[in-house]
Length: 128
Length: 191
Image (cartoon, rainbow over all chains, first blue to last red; front, side, top):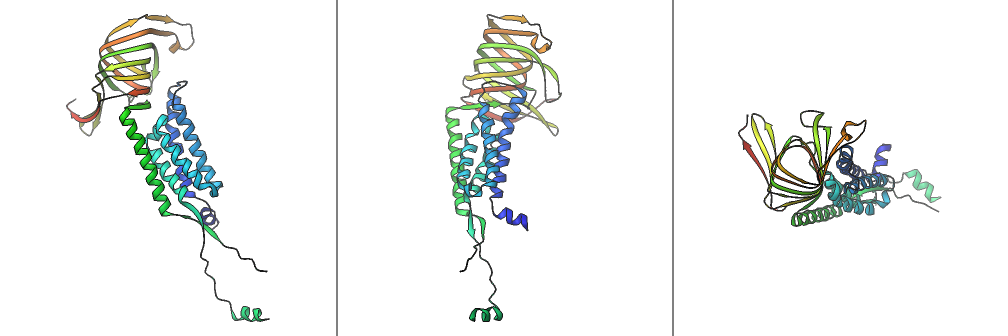
């Protein structure tokens, strides 16, 4: 019950998608760096984009009110990550676009609460 | 005085979601199309494929370095190979291919470029190089080092290879410009 309440107060789906996409984008340049250390390589951009996307995913969990702007950044960065990291072989980019769109579409709305009609005792209490 | 607490919860607006998703995919498509037009792909690793062949009619490159190393192939964790680093190069009639055994059949995935291919920042790990080679300012050097991979190095300012066949384990390019690229997958007869 507590988890459901926590989940409903933040964009969990969008955040998780963004984190997964960030990790996928990180995977390509990390692999590249471990096998060949090429100083000054353009792959460092991929490392940066992947890291920032993962961070955005985590931040969206803790600052749900900023989800709209975080969503825009997620889509922008995941598309740009095609340069330098191949966008996690494009899967990372696609996950990032879906995650970013989910973050953008998330908003807080008032909930309809079922209210039971006042009992006779409550009604009589009001009359006094 | 009465206070009322209005409970709120997260909702996903379908309209915003689909329009954001559509915009994102459209921009991605535009980016990919613009890559297709200019023919440039950045930081392309063809690693982990292992044991594929590179053939070409002519290669002209500047800033060449070669040193031996032990590296991974698709069949072994460690196999002796040589690393070739070339700063800038142009290749005529490039063919890259890899054969896969699927069931009882052999399938060849082949990438060819009909026009000259320009590459910068090439790293190429090869197990075998067969070619007619020409070097300028060729230097073979030995170094005193505990690491055997650093004990020997071959450098030259200019390299020309003709009618080459290279058994390749790892290929990395900083930028590659492949005009007239063609990818084919075909069944071949091989034992």
